[in-house]
Length: 121
Image (tube, rainbow, N blue to C red):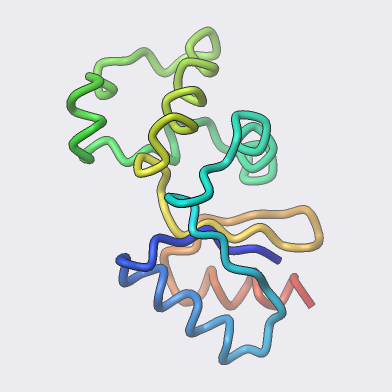
């Protein structure tokens, strides 16, 4: 399993701590330093069952600069959103955990982290 983290984020640090507590085997990806490609984002979105606007941090400074809040949230605009996430990884909601069973989750709470950790064994 892999967890995408921003080390400055308290929810990310908490999720990593919970993975440690559960004994899960995982790798950490500092996605601000090692941004996901558009293909990786498409894969993770498919695993999450979400659209790119569902995992976009619209309150980030760069989001406001890009005017993302006004972008249409429709299939025809999907690639535009994915391109923005790839170009500006700070916009990606965190932490995201991808489990070995092919699932993924935006793991912002303890129950979600523990559920994904259980699937990753």
